[in-house]
Amino acid sequence: MKGHAIAGPSLALIKYWGKKNAIENTPATGSLAVTLAGLESRTEVSFDDRDSVVVNTEEQPLGRFTAFLDGLRGDLGLVGRGLAVVSSNNFPTAAGLASSSSGFAALAGAVAALSGVEATPERLSALARIGSGSATRPVFGGFTVFDAGALAARPEHDQRYWPDFRVVLCVVREGAKATPSRAGMESSRQTSPYYQPWVDTSPALLADARVALADRNWGRLGPLVRQSYLSMFGTMFSAEPPLIYWQPESLALIQTLQVLRREGFTAWETMDAGPQVKVFCPADQSGALVAELDRRVPGLRFLTAAPGPGLRTWRTEGVSP
Ligand code: DP6
Image (cartoon, rainbow, N blue to C red; front, side, top):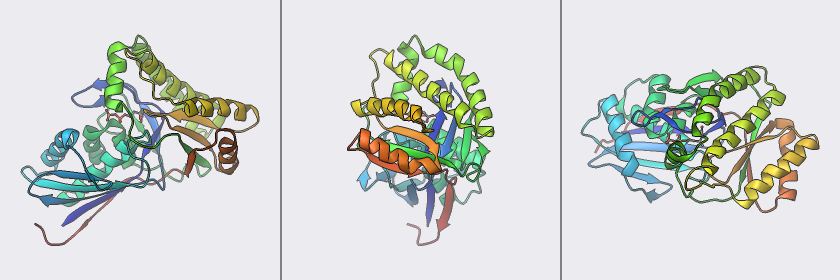
């Protein structure tokens, strides 16, 4: 018997960065995100004598997975059962393309499917939170909100809400990032003088962005998206030691986008705990945008994604070990 799940990454327009409660893994700042289509974490889980986790064919140290698997076992009535997890991503892992969001959402979904428990999306979202805060969101498709202090994310608008919405992912560097976001946000909290102002200003950003999204208004949404990621990076640059995820190409893209906006493009970038730049734009501009970015900042890989579906789970029967 196997539990299976597929989840897409959740890319935040308004960022979660910092924890309200580190033990419960609840966020200090509310986030607004889109679940992406076409990029996937696929996970299957079966019972075994002991726990094991293989990601993209490589066996992983259990470290952070142990607490997560224990949480899932406790909630889903599987205490004492070992779990063999095999997962793969069809996009760069741990490089700031939000693979932890899709990975932990898929893992929660696959274990729930294996258990046979009919878990609601809200329960799956809360379970995914123990793995990663951002993993609460892609349990739902389309646009999602994960409120400050919340235990689970909630759906805001479904996958079909804004057919014109695209994300161009500019892959600056492949490979794992230097500082995982969990350590990075903790360092911001402990050492940055701008951390508290970041937390204090985030509710208004989230509220305004939700209104702009409800109007499908690029002109209002774009500057809020920019404000959110640059404020978040303000807490990183001012941490001790400073956290600098940017690479020269990241800055080149940001500055090129400033020029492209002046030239008439509707394109607003964001970044996460890595060097990749992700650009929100209307579908009919995405082709020309990629061509211009490729011409002006050569040598990068570009992926374009639309809003995608939420978590899919199923169980296959077979011989149980
Ligand atoms: C910059 O969800 O990876 O991507 O809850 O500690 O696992 P943990 O953190 P994680 O942080 C994501 C931070 C971000 C912004 C976002 O996705 O909202």
